Image 1 (cartoon, rainbow, N blue to C red):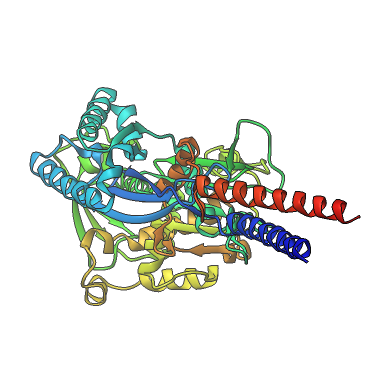
Image 2: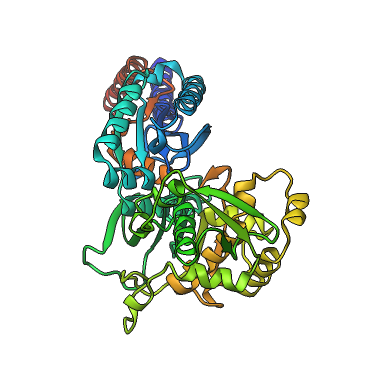
Length: 496
């Protein structure tokens, strides 16, 4: 009787030990969770031709397929013109540097202090500095050196201050647009980041003050150096991109003003300015740029002023603006935009941002709209008198308001005659400023590329039981199970 009771107890201990071992193993495996190592931060200063903007981004430190899932968390506009104007006006320089300090203080408050010394900061100068460098390399280098010294004094990890190429600007803008549209990555039903099924990319159209960029991935990518290849989230993309220096909104208008001065003496009629409006503009403003230097009149005097009288003639405005494009250089070429530049056939959807968006927004056109609607709205706007415009746009600066007619006609000529959009493909363009509170700008695309070069950090594994407790429980109940099993075997042998 005693032996049977001992055997029953041994069986009970064996079963209990096995149950505990299995239960502890299941808990240790299935109740394990992971802690994120935190966020990484990055700062990009977009030093454009007309202003400088500070962007702050962050992304999870563990990343996805070697690329960070980047989010814009702050934007700060620095007062004054672009850095290419530094040194021209001491009073303006003081305001710009003061505004820069204010933006940097806000940036330091946005990023945790413990992350300051590991947060990369980068300055990218675009077409304004590209033009200055071609005109006066010494002045351009001095400005970049001054910016570099300033950024190195900040508590962040200075990475680089450089003048980026127009093609880089176009490529980064394309990356930003597609990233924000979820064309590279999206969350599935299990909350995991995956590449969208059948994902297609969109083209990007950027209009700045001194240059304009087009970028898209053609249906049949070329392997030549006319295409850029970039890897994001484990996939490679082939992108056509081109930047047209001197064809940003401001520089294009300078070209038109220069053309008008050459065809008249003294007072010049400007068909793009509103009726009953006149402006006195110094010749230095018109011909002081590299984009118009070759058009200087024989009697050029930087101190001399030219009076422009608006006639509000939309048809003549469009014709005058078209004259700054060299279309004859593309005659007989199937894949050519203007100025003899190669461009593959347009394909897919496009997003037009920056100057494109601001101009169409002023005309009260946003998102998708037809070429016919754009034409009729432009015609109506350009035919209005100055007083009428002032009363309806009282909060808009004079320098912007007088030029919206020019900008609209410039956009038409650039997109239709330059990039070869027609009434059908025009409807594939979405005029947009941002997506989910993040601006469409080259700076985010750059930060995505940069995050490829920032080492990923492994997630922290948090176990329900510490390794020592887990090992101790396994050892104790395994030993108990073995002893119980041995006792049962001995009991069975003796009873036989």
